[in-house]
Length: 220
Image: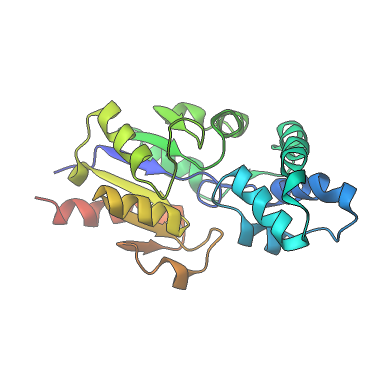
């Protein structure tokens, strides 16, 4: 049985967006006179969507939650203008997507849909995907399996014909909850020990085609 659908995460999987996210957070918190976040601190906070990100930043700096709406507005306005300043594809992404052109592919991200599409188009890989589901596309986002089930339904793929590829526990948990095979990238934003629950671990997206061969050999 062949794999018919690959679901990809975006940040930390296809693209390294950490510097642009870091700069946008620091713009959002500048009025409060706090020390700027480092890229490493930013990476430790991202993954659950921008609203939750701002909540965690507010908690970190003891900024009143009454300021959350203003922080979020400053972040979004700045990020929209700067989300492609430093964001780049990870090595091997374009070549791997090209090699998998015959398989349906979608992006499921906890970044908002419009921002995700803008990045994919700006980096020249949008056309590889059937569609993009951001955090605002459905009532629930990863680690909920809802986006996974939606993608499978839209593209007519069964559980055993679908895999999810990501760099975080949110991707693994969403995939496991949906009953599909999970592939975790150790070169993204989370260390390998955090990804032990995945069915497969890979160090580079260039390893994905070989993993697909292994998965297909195990399928009924």
